[in-house]
Image (cartoon, rainbow, N blue to C red):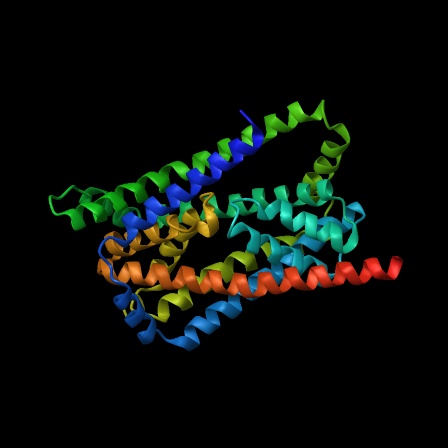
Length: 336
């Protein structure tokens, strides 16, 4: 099959799956109800959540600098931060396209080879996967009784709306059990694919290998670990404060916020544009089935939170892309 046609078919499939998940999640929720939910939301908490999100991106950019410096590619913070945000921005349109875009943007800014920086991003993703799996395991262990009751309560009803909700619950169960396995399988496959490519693009793979193993050459390992912990703390606080912004979720405790955060993390890890569909479905199902939040309020919450987080990425990511292009053109003019 033609590679271009294959990409088109894959992209159309992603869009259709996103639409299906959104249809299941929304059910009969009206836009007017979502608008009313937004009006009642505490805007200071939403702004605080956005600022913490930006803080997490700031720390991620600093962590990336730590990875690339010991292998001979010191970065300016501005280059690192703009490239990280460009990656998030591209991910909203092309699932997993942000990783390459982030590295290509960095190459345009300071000539860091794409294969080297991409290898360091793979290393970052492995670390992030580890933290996500630890959180998933911890949440299940701490709230095992709640999850047992949750799974036991899932059943099919004749009413179409209730049936959609029940389907959401089953999908939540499936994703939470299968996604960690799929992640491990994905990285295994990538590993073997890399071995096959070695014979075709040896120099490129040598660069990727150097980037991946940059974590073993860290000069400040303690700071790297601290950064990693702080990034995930920021992610959690983003989720906690945004839950405080809505009357329907403001009464939930810190542990509940952690559970919803983990569910949201799993949803965003699914390769859909910006987690659209998967986030709305799984987060609303978690709020409804585990914590008894009314389905319409849970769906409205997921829609507004996802839109708010996406807006932050669009504004900062698009700004970073524009600034990167201006910097690149300015530098080209200087050398021409």
